[in-house]
Length: 299
Image (cartoon, rainbow, N blue to C red; front, side, top):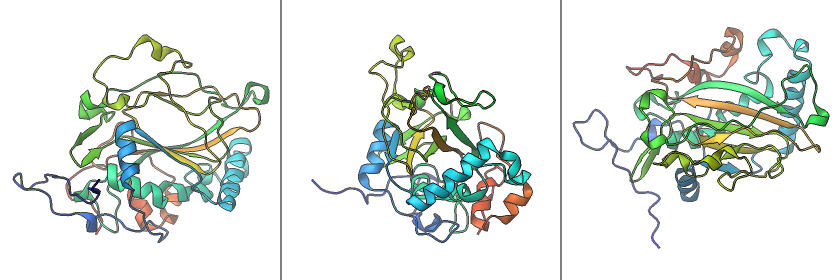
């Protein structure tokens, strides 16, 4: 079987219908920490487009996991021990996750707008960031938000209006997921014990979801197991849901990010504390620039 992974998709810009020239040089090839951005494999691209989600296990090193987990635990239980402007997963060691090389590679492929990208500028924006700290009922702290109920939503992304951003579009050789969630699992996730639930392929569904969607035990749902330091990508056009955490061996400590187009957005802009933003590397700062299309690029 021939390898077509290098075939160029026919993308049209402001070119009177002519194909956009190869734009790889417009996309950052290093992240803001100077780390090389890996290109996705053919399998990774195919799986994400086919399924609407992709799990990459064991991405982070043990020392990174420990440092980030300690910070998240402090943020959850003792936020007052941190300076006010650092009480966020956009601060501390978890800040590095927002443009981890693997994330940049994924979003370069499925999100970046080439006309709003450059080696010094990401072609998408960060729309939200949060700590998902979940506990089993026997371990729960009453004064903390440590549970999420089953609540299926989204799906049918090929048939949505672009304005709500929960859409997904594709044509031969290229797919576009303008509303993409990235979840970093800093503790192990056991199968069926509280990991995110996903309806594989539902981002392309043409029919109304069946009643079985309302049952978290239905075979319609897919979930995952993974070691600490793994990352889950999924398009928000996919039907998905939280699921109560029942694993009594460890809590769920996850850092979740939501990425939007830089020329539009479903929700208000994510605005870090100015002191936090100013201390970020210049390339990372471009994730928080204003959302508009005309010449909104840093060269």
